[in-house]
Image (cartoon, rainbow, N blue to C red; front, side, top):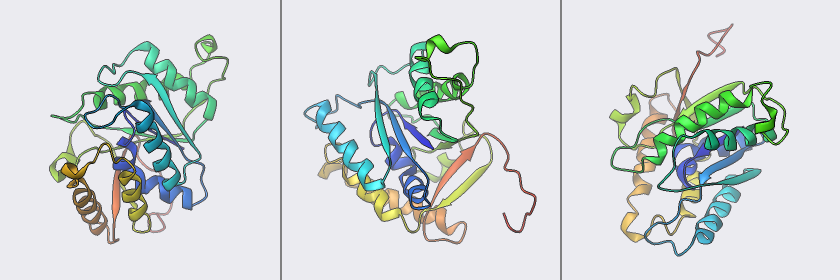
Amino acid sequence: MIAVGAHPDDVEIGCGGTLAALVDAGYSVGIIDLTDGEPTPVCPSPEVRLAEAAAAAQVLGVAVRLTLPLPNRALFDSFEARVALAREFRKHRPRLVIGLGNRTPMASPDHWQARQIIDAAVFYSRLTKWDHHFAGYPPHKIDRQYYYHLSFDLDRLNDPELFGPAVIQDISATLERKLAAVRCYETQFPPTKQDIYPRVINLARTLGQSVGVEAGERLVGVRPILTRDLLAT
């Protein structure tokens, strides 16, 4: 599976516990960042941010982490951006894609642009008779797509833009690794922004308790989940 963010740290905050749980379950997991996330106020260079991203990936145990050469602060849903991401989907052939799902008012508008790019790339990945756009990689149909939240406010979890069936992933065993991955971003969360950690913990605890586990992450799907045994499901 592949998780996609606009910037390094989006995936860790939104679904890092889920990725670590999938790694523990034996699945091959990758992360694609659409931009390098720079410039930002404290980070001295893109290379530093990329080193933080690599360290976070190692903490989570993901097999592959890629950064596309799209521009931070000027990320737009364009044909070129869609093709760049779809090319990676065709190359790596994930069964599942988890991507940004909602607008983030008073935060980066790149997040909403990323959602639209991801949606289009999932579709472009399977299109036939278009191989010249994708460096010769053959079409690939992605089985499932889910969205993650970049919000710590419970009322934003019911954002109408995040429509579809929701699931809670149990991250009781991986919450600490999620936090450790976020802590790799020292330039993004200096001493003045340490409030992010209790907010991440509180949301995970609340979501977990809603389904009877210690900690959870909420993901929203684009299709209903089929079951032939409701009790087993």
